[in-house]
Structure formats: structure tokens, C-alpha cells
Length: 109
Image (cartoon, rainbow, N blue to C red):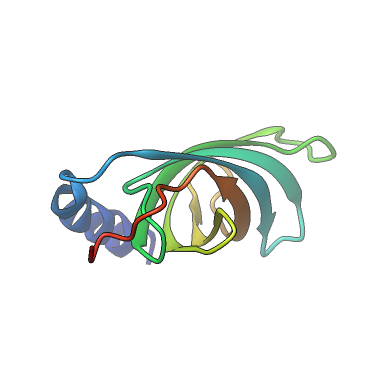
């Protein structure tokens, strides 16, 4: 599954090269029930867009404190982003929610 996700991200990411890159700050929760603070680069800074993300996470109460991840998700109103992906370093799936400074117009405008 991990290899398939990487291939999908690498195939989809160039399609978003026309958009401005967004930066998100948020919380990761792995399926191993570890919680961390994350910073991610997103493929778009537009509202209501499908995005691909790469980032790093700090897990303050975990044995392995650092994680590096890739994922995908969607931006939403109120400058939020919801993501799902794989933490490459910890070898664990995660869900994430965060704040991103979104542009006021959507990509369809």
C-alpha cells in the first residue's frame, strides 16, 4: 500500500503545479494512537480543492519523536485542511487536520 500511495502522489502532484503552494500547521493522529504537531506543504492554497501534502511531524510523547509524511486531502472553508496519508519514518497511517492560509477565491473561479 505504501508504494502505491507514493506512486499516486508523484503522478498527481505535477497536475497542481499551476497553483500557489499552501503551508499548513496542524495536528496528526496516527492509527497507532500517537498525536503530533505537524507542518505540511500543500499542492494548492485554494478553497475547496483536492490537495497533495508532504510534511514533518513532531510527536512529543512518542519514542520516535519525528515523522515525515505524504498524504492527500481537501481544503475547506474557515482555512482548514483535512488530510489522510502515511508517515514514512514511523511506517504508520495518519489523519490530520490543520490551519492553512487559503486564497479567497476557489480554483474554479
